[in-house]
Length: 288
Image (cartoon, rainbow, N blue to C red; front, side, top):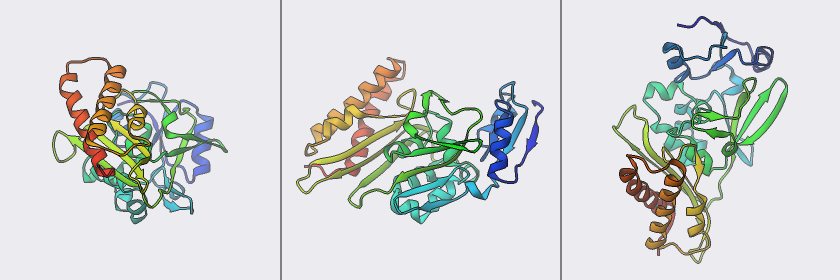
């Protein structure tokens, strides 16, 4: 195993100072569900000289309602999100997704922030956060910047977060009362399974049944996490029908093929993607 110094800062200010003073030499450990595997397999970057644990920092462990937004601290675990009444009420699809991550042991250690910034195409909490239009708060030294979650992904397992930046929280606006949401996960088995695919959606319809808001995202479908705007636009302003849902599913599979190319798995994934798109849309829309 690679040699490194283990650091446990006393507070957030100290953690940010350590990152700034040792840029590129520090690996952050919150839940550790990915970092521990890297350490075990000797896959930490050669530049890493320190592993800094932040899971104990109370400044990073919270779920709060500030009146307009729901804010989740970077050290908040999947289990805490899944069990939070505030999340269940205001973002039920995120609570559902967090409840499916890994196993109980993983959910009690892993964090939603960590799951998100790994930029894994299979991450369960990214699609719900994308349809919630979540924002990531990053801190470098004493300075902060806020970035829409959709803008941090640069490729599979890659982000534009600096190696001297620390995620402090993720937040999103509370949903209008008439919003419907859904999360669907397809996995190989019922426990400790990574997603084969997962889908998240939110929608609103007016009194006439027309779709006035729709957001769709999926995991393990495209190389980088993203929304499916072409599929959304098929239904926006229209009254949903089975034929329109089918067309939206085909738009999602079309995006998948354009971004990923035609692979050995495409013959399997294409109809499954289309079917799951229809299923998630049926949960958030009233079909006429």
